[in-house]
Amino acid sequence: MLKPRECIAALSPYRSPIVSRERLNLDLNENTGGCSPLVLARLRSLSTLDLARYPEREPSERAVAKFLGLKPEQVLLTNGVDDALLALFATYLGPGDEMLLADPTFVMYSIYGAATGAQLVRVRAGDELAFPATELIERISPCTRVIAIANPNNPTGTAASRPDLLRIVEAAPNAAVLVDEAYFEFHGETLLPDLARYPNLFVARTFSKGYGLAGLRLGVLAAAPEQLGFVRRFCSPFNVNAVALACLEEALADQKFVAEYVTQIKQGRERLVQLCDELGLRSWPSRANFGLVRVGPSADVFVAAMARRGVQVRDVSANPGCEGCVRITIATGPQMDGVLAAIRETVAEIRS
Image 1 (cartoon, one colour):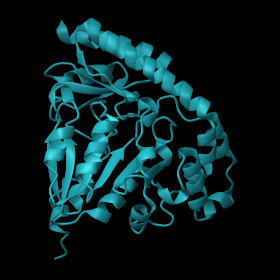
Image 2: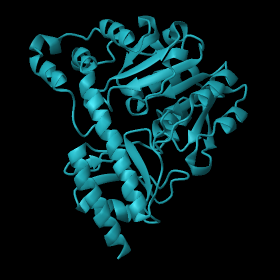
Image 3: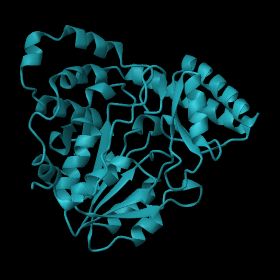
C-alpha cells in the first residue's frame, strides 16, 4: 500500500480560509480597494498569444531588483510568498533539523516546516504579544537550520525592531533567517539593505497587500546570490504565471496608487483604535493592514454578529495569547464608515 512520508501523514489538511464572498471580506488581509487602474488596463490588453506562451521570469526579476535597489541575482520571483516558503524550507530543512518560530505567527510557516520532517521549536510571544527576540536567540542550537519571522507579524500586527532582528541573524550564522515583510508598505521598515552583510538573511515581499494583486499570486524572495542560487534549484522555471508578470511593470510604476491606499489604511487603523478605546475593547498597535482586537470570551459570537451585518472578520482566538480576539482587516476610508458602525452595533448587541 502506497503511503506518504510520516511527516506528511501527520499533518492536518489545510483548506481555504475563505468563508464567504457575499460580505465585505475583512478576514483575509486583502486590499479591499482593488488594484491600480494601470494594472487593470494592462490585463485588458493581453492577447491570446500572451496567454499561450510560457512566461519569462528573468526580465521581471531585473525590474524588481532595480526597484528594490538590489542586483538581479539577489531576487527570485515566486508564485506568492507561499511558493517562496516552500522552496526556502525545502532547501535548508530536513529530518533532524530544527525550525524556530515565534508563536503566534503566520500559520504556513509551521505547515511547510513540518512537511520537511524538521522539528518545530515554538517560542511564545512576550507580554502584550511582544516579539520574543531574546527567547528566540536562547533557543538557537546546532540543529537550528531555519528561523521564520513575520515582520510585522500576523495575526498580531506587532513589529520587531531592526536591532533585534539583526541580533538573531548574527546569532544564527548557520541558519537561514527569513524576515517576511509581507506588510512592508504599511510598516515602512526593511532589512533589504542588510542583505549584503549577512549571507544567511532572506527577505520576502508580496504584491498581494499594498498593490492589491493577491489573485495574481506574485511574491519576492531576496537574499545573497549564492544562497538564493540554492533556493532556485527548487523552483520551476515557469513558477510565476504570464498574467502576473505582464502586470508587474504597471504595478511598480503606479506608486501614487500604493501611497494613497496606504494612507487610507493608516487612517483606518487609527479610527479602529479610537473606537476600541471608546468601547473599552483591548487592541494592539498595528504596523500592518489589520488590527487585533480582544472582544471577549466568545469571539465566535462577535464574528457571527458581524457577518449578519455584512462584514466578515477572523476569529483568531485559537492562537496562543490571542484568546477572545478577532483580526479585522482595515478597509478603505468609505468602507470603514460602515465597518466601525457594525462593530459598535455588534458590541452593543453582545453586551445587552
